[in-house]
Length: 114
Image 1 (spheres, rainbow, N blue to C red):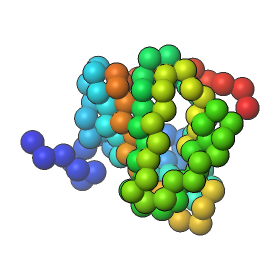
Image 2: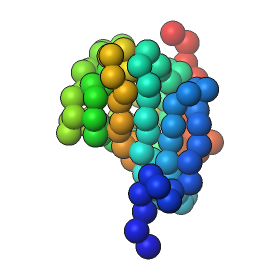
Image 3: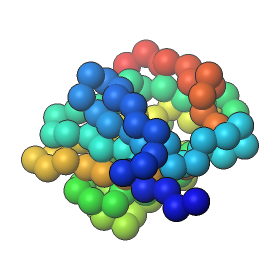
């Protein structure tokens, strides 16, 4: 079955950010996310999940282990387990990106101190 934002399971996080589950199982998660201007996720790491963030549109800042990485459209970064990270949109446009997790990151997130 074809999947897209139009027919995927949708959820809201951080009060105003959107996520669409494109693939959702224990072994693999693929989520299309949208972050409005001046939003960010909470800094965290995953005990087991390896993640890959890939920007579709807009410009995102991915803070990884204290280093800020600017991601333009069609650029991505892989995050190893146990690596603190935080996706940030401090640009003046919405950011849309894919976050791919293997295995799923559900229940695997540990918040870190700023």
